[in-house]
Length: 159
Image (cartoon, rainbow, N blue to C red):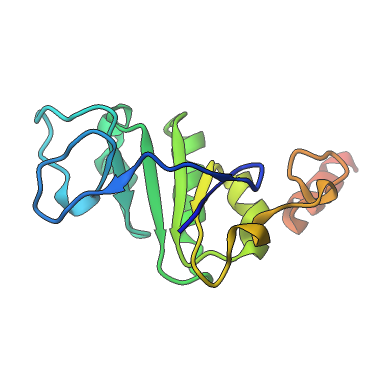
């Protein structure tokens, strides 16, 4: 699986998934269920894998311990991962890498970026070439129309 950055380019991945039951090590991504109790020293850098139903308030005080947070998408139509990423960025001020893993599709790429994802792990069904954005569709392009709700809200505020 390739790792795609916010520009739609394939990048090298220095992270690995931790082995079940193994002690956390640098540059590993550990599942939330295997996170050691608070107060336990953690290696640095460390990644954390969150299921879509994770309660961020339970780990908020420990977010500074992680250089990467990988958010699982069990199905492409499961939008909880978008909510988690947005909360990590806006509510909790997480500045490091947020990665989408699991079932995401190229049509969701702009939405992933707008919610705060910085990378994603592709699946074999969607090779790296499918994630390239035309310049007109890039989320930072001011001419891009954006989400319908945002357009309607801005229209209402301007009136």
